[in-house]
Image (cartoon, rainbow, N blue to C red; front, side, top):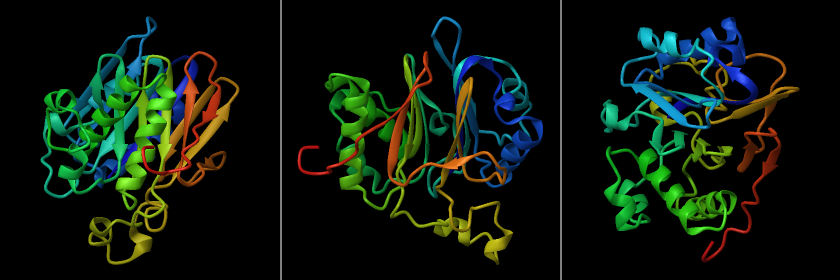
Length: 269
């Protein structure tokens, strides 16, 4: 259970530039709850994907402030982690997960993990480094991409299978590929707020903005030179809710947004 921020822009941006200083400070303040690590990934001018992560809270890690204020690339993502119960706060469990020029960050919980891991081929399983459901989710998506004719069809197939196998999971995620950012907002049957969040607050109104009823919500904003995506936690005008149980791809060159067709969800899909 985490927070996400993603962007695709016409020029290199620092993550702080996506929101502006006051709003980015609000986003970072969510690390008081989502304080089990942070990470960022971005494409540089040559199209190479880079990533940095730390199991330290973004609220107290000076490296976070340094990285998020540098114009690193035209496409990127930031992740604030709140570890699912029982999963260690450790470098190998910290998002984003990467493989070559692919980077992935997840906001949700897919259980049971052995059922998810059973979807992986031996080759995909051998690449696992940590214990999280999120890393297994990433490996399954890459596996489907490798088996498909395109990234879009591979991601679509992976999501259809996961929606069928884990209908109550939140599959919210950002996937940065060599040519595309995928924004995934699938969570309609996931509990909001999660039980772990309810246990921390005596009253719903004490929770951060929209966490009580829209913990897994995602919003997007399209400007003349950028596309932005963010999970709930800000209370600012200018954002539009991402439709429920949907996913879209943003072309890194043109910034064109294309919605994936996730239906029908049936045998073999």
